Amino acid sequence: MGRFLWLMNTPGAPPDFLHQLTEHRFDVVQQYEMERAEFGDYDGIITGMHSDQRHLASLGDRLGAYIDAGGALIFSGHVSHPFLPGLTPFRPVEQKGLESLRIHLETPHPLTEGLTSDHLTFQRTVAGFYGRGGNPPPPGATVLSSVGFDRVPVDWIERRGKGWLYVHCGNDLWAHYRRADPEGLGHLRRVFDFFAGATV
Amino acid sequence: MTRIAAVDGGTYFHHHTLCEEPFAGCFDDIIYIRDVAFTDLSPYDVVFLPCRLNTHQIAPLADQLTHYMTGGGTLVVMGETFPERWLKDIDFTPCETNFWWWVEGLPGPAPRIARPEHPLMADVTAKDCIWHLHGHFHPKGPQVPVIEDDEGALLIEDAETYAPGRLIATTLDPCYHHGSHFMPATTAFLKRFLPALRKLG
Image (cartoon, rainbow over all chains, first blue to last red; front, side, top):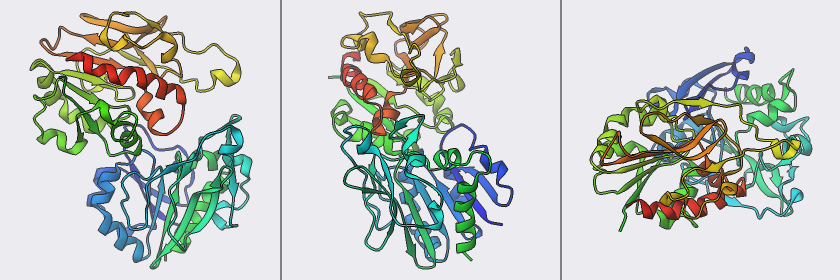
């Protein structure tokens, strides 16, 4: 069983699937409440496209130490305020039709096992939701997926100390992973299983 | 010269809309959401709250924002900030958002400019307001629809409740989509809408 801190910065509810992945525990809090959390209690901290990156930057030292000690930070969104060393602001790709927004799977990895380019590229035949550019990865990061003709990195993961930094450059990752297996939620389970097992 | 402040929630879509081209010049100052409570808003003719600013962060500022308006300021409230939860007498009905009408061949939103003489509407056409809808206001009392459709109002102005200041609120959410580099129609809307904020002085 993994334990995750799920950060919100909207007044809505978190995704329903958190209640379905009963093998893991998700503590859902408004982002600013994370200041009172003991990061070390968590296998992963999840923050998304609505996150206040200025606030995350104010906690950069704590987050960096947490990752180094074995934690995982899983971020979806465009980097606008680099809140950890090695993060670089978002660079959009030029949008010139569907293929300019096609998502390519790059390095085989447990996090993306079983997913296809079409799973990630399309939502009801429309491309662009998953990623429209990149948060350039630091040297040594493993690129999991890319977008467009130039295969700009969209998802990358980097080992930092004993922990992980996982960056997804686009709308929140979860809706696409859910749609790829809406009944079994297999792809979602794989993500949380990975971080629960990888952060001993 | 109309002085305009925008409130930045620290999100990437706020940053891109408020701080980067082509709209950075539409705002004189950017105030971080967590600094608003410590900021004197009275020097500003217009305070702009962009789309999806977290309602939980705005609500504790409601008294300050109300005093800003009754002191003569214009508060512009964009979509998905849910002003009915932190201002009085706002009647809002959310709707099932159809993001896909243009894919499915269904009729899309059908807005009208109800007050073409309004300074914010100087360059905005009904067609500019079409991408999708999240809900409608139902104007009451001194609230006047500026953009509307058959279901209700998409942008309202209230120049009496907070006189000598005023409230302008919309259910449209262009800052979020433009700021996400997604949905060019919203960029086109903002190109006509944001420069007109200077006319609100």
